[in-house]
Amino acid sequence: MNVSIIITFYKGINILNLCIRSILDNTTIDGNIEILIINDNPCESLSETYQLFFRSCDLTIHNMIQNKGYSAACNVGVKLAKYEYIVLLDCDIIPQKHWLNELIYTYNMQSNPGSVSSKIIEADTGRLFGYGVGIHGVDIILYKRHGKLDAFSDVDRNFCMVTSGCLLMKKSLYEEIQGQDETFFNADNDLDLTYRIYLSGKTNSISTKSIVYHRGHVSGNIRVLPSRQDSKAWLFKKWGNNLSENTLEILASILTAAEKNNIGGSSILASFSNSLFRNDYFKIISTVFKTTFIQKYDLKNKDMLNKIFINDYLSWDICRTNISIIYFVDDYRSLLENAFWFKNRACNDMIIDKNGNTLLCPQECINI
Image 1 (tube, one colour):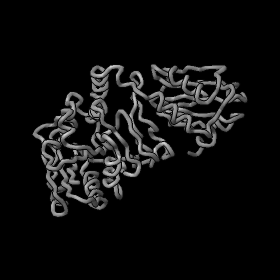
Image 2 (cartoon, helix red, strand yellow):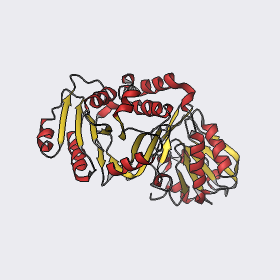
Image 3 (spheres, one colour):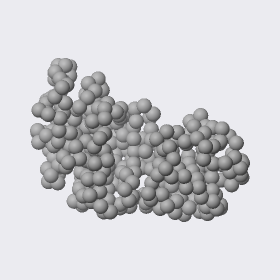
Image 4 (cartoon, helix red, strand yellow):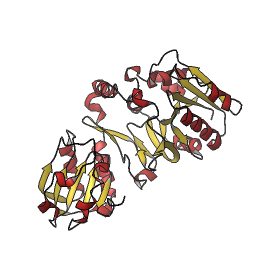
């Protein structure tokens, strides 16, 4: 298999150089490889990068005349690619041993392959960037986002959508579905792309043995703000409720597999989630863990951008009750700094977030 690796760049030359070095150190396939860097920042020169690597690989740098966004940069890269298979690769992705071989293997194992993503791990925490994407209502869910590597992420899986940080597919398929919608500019373009692959009848897969690390936040706000909400709005305008497919079923299967967290009986629900659809998640939690919520504290619109100190919202008599509490949040990390509360609890509790992460308290929440 001959592969064109397309790296989009806006900012972060050091991490770009590490990305290329990691490709050279960790890639051996039966075929040819070219590396195409699409420089989407006219203010940044990549001449030193070219001088570092052009003798070691088939390297081309294409400089965009103006910043046109991630989607447009990918589209230009695909047009320039000379091989049948392409890999879309963010410049802050650091591939590990056999990453491309494993992508190819998973691709070839599919009966009707569309795209295959690597397992992406956060470079700072060693946790999952996410393992597949689902949408419920207007909630964009990255399954096991910021979660530990576990049995769920240890199996190749197919999803309606996957992220494009490290994505293998055929150039002809990319062109057939008309590439990336440049209206998205920098955000949610990959969800739109892979959803159209899914609608074409082909699979979007994740290869659990293709490991890459993700640095993140190297390009600054231009890759996120101010267009993030506009991109999300455009995604839902295009597809509406059609995007919400199998998401609740997948979340239920993730929670069901967490056998150690079997609460059972009666419990108290304390929700700090801002999701408009949190009642749907409550139903899944109640069903999966066979528990009845005898009290509910729906604490929407609290300070969710920072850490949540539970004592600010729940009274001490609740802390001292001997009934298990299930805490539901949008991101489990917002509740981790509550050692005082959890050490004074009379029984085990559980934190669940809308990405499917589960933690027992206090065992997994103190000194995490």
